[in-house]
Length: 227
Image (cartoon, rainbow, N blue to C red; front, side, top):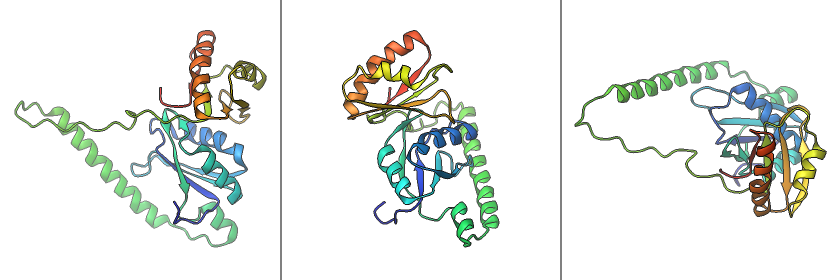
């Protein structure tokens, strides 16, 4: 990351691939918009680009704050990894007049993605249909979700009832040491962020508040580290 010049676009990976594209874009916009105005959110579901996204801010300062504050943030059960993007985003090149269409390259990559996906599906099908008892057992694959995400000082709360407001959440969480603030996102009802002074204090609050909230309004989910 040190070799990449800080810029307005950040690259986010290790995203949960099971989340639908539109839902993912809305959730990413809701999370990152607390750091500044967002010009574009790009996430694709092609085989090669699954689990990745690009967030374009209107300033380098906003991008830098988001990168620092949300590095390792547990998002849909996975800790996100964030860095500055290597190249300038289309929305910025169009604005400064340096945009060059990349249609041919994109079509070529899409074709390659389709071929890779077909190959993977064929391998899975062959493995599933194989009933040779003498065939060597395949080595177990490491699961991306096997290792719990590290603790984070910001809790991500989702599945909140429509009537929930910041005062209600503040009343619940301010009883825990280190409580800083609650941030709800108008553009994405049902989710909120609760910030603490340290990841340890957030972990304690998540464990205790989670039992209270889930007992009263199941199935509210709180994420601060791997469950």
